[in-house]
Length: 296
Image (cartoon, rainbow, N blue to C red; front, top):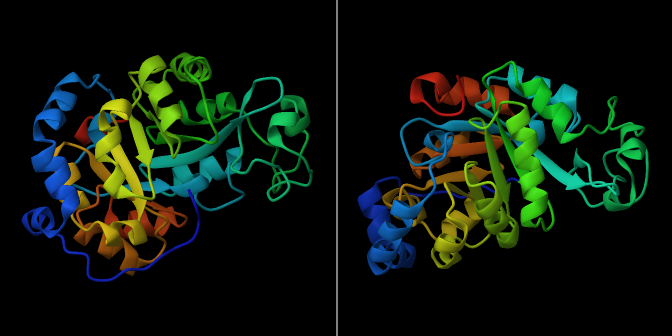
C-alpha cells in the first residue's frame, strides 16, 4: 500500500445516507442483491473473518509493520508493542522461491544492496542490511507472531499463482496461525488464487476504484476491501454498501487524528497507519479475544 496520506473532508457516516448517496449502493446492494446474497452464502468460513468484516470497533493495522525499518523483524516487534490489532507486511519471492518480506521490486530503497528481489537468492537477501536488520523470510516473521495475539496482514506483491499461495498457507499452518493471518493484494489474480488454494484465510481486496468492486465479488470473495480516503471520496456510499454485504472497509494510509476521525465517521472497519501506537491509543483496541477473531 502507498504511504502517501490524503485528507478528504465531509464523508458522512450514516449508513442510510450512504446507501442513498451514490451508484455503488444501488449497484451492490440493490442491483446485485441476489448475487450478493448468493455470494455471501457460498463464502468459505474464515476463522479470522470476524475481525475484518463489518462490525463495531475500529481495527488498527500497522502499515509495513508501523514504525521502524519496514518489513523487518524488529519492526514487527515494534508493531506488536504498539498495540495494533494487525501488523502488515509485504511479501515477494526470491530467486530460489523463498517468500521474503520486501515491498519494492528491488532492494535498492530499503537495503544497502541493489538488484531485483526475484533475481537474488534468500541467502543473498538475508546478507543485506535493511536498516539494521537483515531481510527476513515470511517463516521467520510468523515465528515472531506465534507467541502473541496480534494478527498479520500479508500483502502479496506482484502476481501469485495458486501453488505459490498454497506455499504461504502451508507456512501459516505450520506456525499455527491459521486464525490470525489475512492475505491482501491489489492483484485480482493473486486473490483469486488465494480463494482457491487457501480458502480458510480471509482476503483483503485492495483497490483504487471502489466502483469496480461489485464486478469482482464472486471472483475474489473478499472479507474486506481496502482503499484510500481519496478513493472513498469518489464513492461515499461504499461503507454502507459493503457493510450490507458483510464486507468491512479499511482505509489507508492514515497517520493523523483528523484522518482517523474521518475514517470512523465514514463507517470504516479499520485504519491502516504508519503510526499504530498513536492510532491504537486514540481509537482503542478492537478487542481480539472478546470479538472472537484473530487471536486465542
